[in-house]
Image (cartoon, rainbow, N blue to C red):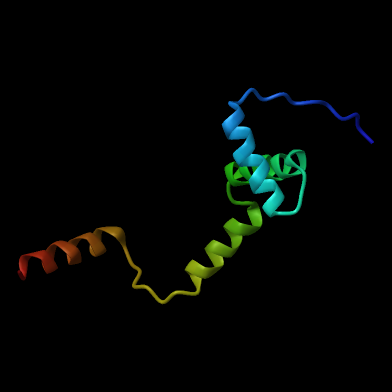
Length: 84
């Protein structure tokens, strides 16, 4: 098991009281509430996992969109614009 380290964050008294009340509403200590909030923030910055990306590719492949040569598709789009 790794050693625990202390993280000190300087905040105004009013902010700390607001955070303490938030923690109490969740039924936990301010320290635990802050640890969980920091973990959530960290996870939100990590981006999609390889599994998330594969699921997105699988969803896209399941769609029935028209495909073809890119030049033909672009020409068709331009032709459609001329109709208006």
